[in-house]
Amino acid sequence: MNKTFKDFRDAALAMLPKGPAWNRNKKSKTAAFFSAVGDVIATLVKDVENLATELIITTTEQLLPEWEADYGLPSPFNSDTIVARRAALAAKAKKKQVTTDTYIKEFAAALGYDLIVVSYHKPFQCGVPTSQCGNGTHEVGCIRSSNAITAVHSRGIVPQEYFEMEMKRILSAHVEINFLYQ
Image (cartoon, rainbow, N blue to C red; front, side, top):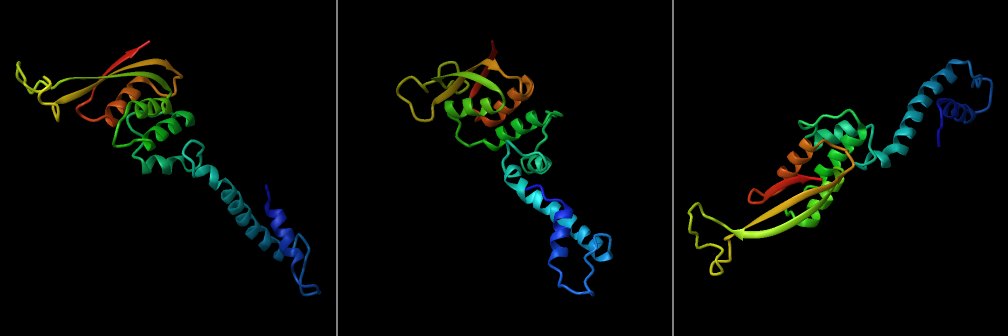
């Protein structure tokens, strides 16, 4: 739309009643008043037009600091680039309670990493050398999940240290992670 204060001033002056009491000169005090009001309205219209963009995490710019504050960012990873800040915000917004292999891959993709996730189960050791858990007779609650995560390709949106910190943060405590970069 790109309306300026002049557009709103001229529209307001055109709506004034006809007659000698209503000065429509663009240099009059009435026009100066409508210019000031028109400037506020033009700013408001611009903000409303950008609202759809600002409400989406991956496209926000003006409201990025507010989004980061809502999600507890910036974390120890501070970047000056808007792309990296949006990527960190999008990854944080995608956090779920249940971490599946698909979710891990999607979360990493939001941070610029392509992953291979290999999940396997191994017996829980219970802190003793000869555990009865996981030997086929005690299946419930006795299996510990492990994930071997290999970063195949990185687009370099966020540093590896931040990526590893965020991955450890989203996964459950019983899940082991090994980072192998290729």
